[in-house]
Amino acid sequence: MLKRTSFLGVFALAMLVLASAAQAATHVYVQIGPPAPVVVAPVPPPAPVGYVWQPGYHVWTGAAYVWTPGVWVRPPHPHAVWVAPRWVHNRHGYYMVSGHWRH
Image (cartoon, rainbow, N blue to C red; front, side, top):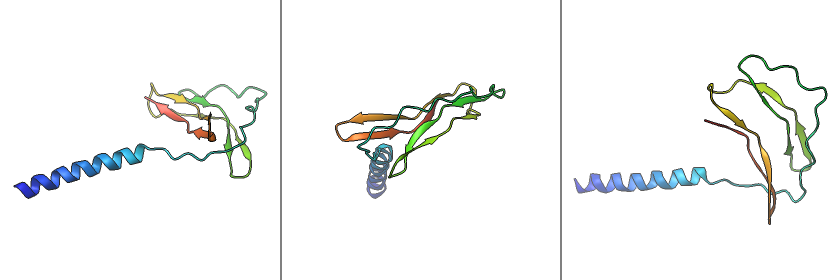
């Protein structure tokens, strides 16, 4: 019984460590800030029923920023809210925080 209990304890500890590592984000830092967002004109057509607008954003390709246009998307469930991607600046440079659905 002691061996099984020890194994379960080690297994549980390993799962906690792996879960923590999976949540740790690795940032790619860019020394040049992103350009201003692209203003889309004319305004996108009206939303299809049940869809939300995900605005465009700049992505770093390793050599330059490239604009990714906005799109209409269907949320994963009715009350999900889209949190747009954004660039964050700190002492190391700029890094992107990916967009995601908030439940």
